[in-house]
Length: 381
Ligand SMILES: *[C@@H]1O[C@H](CO)[C@@H](O)[C@H](O)[C@H]1NC(C)=O
Image (cartoon, rainbow, N blue to C red; front, side, top):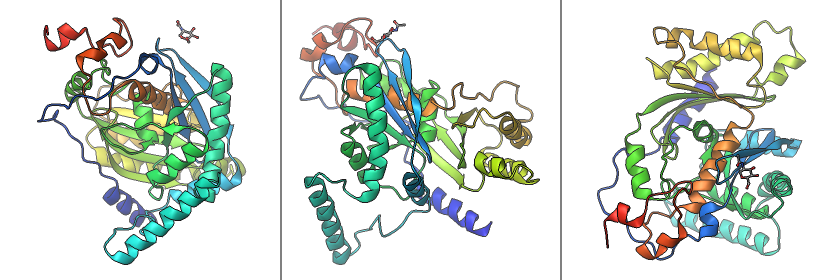
């Protein structure tokens, strides 16, 4: 129990994101290039990795979504994800305080580069994660009937992972890991699930200024995200205004409380109590109310689990109008769907710049993310 408290304290300390709550003060720079029409209308692909399987989703230009079946991972993969979910490791995140650390980092980067040049994954761990991504890529391509080159990768909160590892795992699977210019970093499962339910998303993503202005008007949502699979129970408290920039609060990851534990030992008198306690300890921070409850994971529809979640929240949501707490409709795919939504927007949008007037022809009225005609937008030229 004490170890757990130390762990969550560490996570809270390392996991708070700066969240710009006001649109910017300075004008947005003009882009050098136009986003090609093919990318504006291309389907977005999302890949969601959990501790024991992966899912994928495709979000088309007409807003319809196709889900790719869950693919189970192997034991080596599961062990790596479990390791990466531990508290951050200073060795892997050097502070560059001295020349020795810097030299070590240069040596490490060189080793990775040499392995990649030989066609090997940057590290053996990257290769194992990349293998699962590759399987999801193949299944997605089979479904689409054409190759894909990029996607947004969502993973659980992994304090020990680096963006470099995840980018390399995607590259090993032949995919570019799309990012947002707002954060530059990987997408975590609570964030993807939030977006997958349609929360925190602007309408006119084709114009980053309109999008940022719109998102700045969203109320800040207090969100409890709970993932439940065969091997793990995790709960995270986040606050989110727009889905891209999310602040992470306290989190807990319990490998001893996955549904598998119950299935192996269903006489356990304490199992469901422990689940209730674990969720309650995270939820209690959000007093007085939680706006959204996001459920994800293959076992999140288990009846006994849902009942237990409800019990864990009773003291917290008491007094609120019933029905305020909303849950995801499709917990198995909610993360992949959110990642696909991000992918659609990030590949079709600009990177922190406004397109010049000559790009206007790439857009057509009625496009998803349509920002309005040029004259409407910036006045007659
Ligand atoms: C949306 O687009 C996809 C891909 O072009 C197509 O397969 C699907 O039928 C379309 N859905 C609707 C509702 O039009």
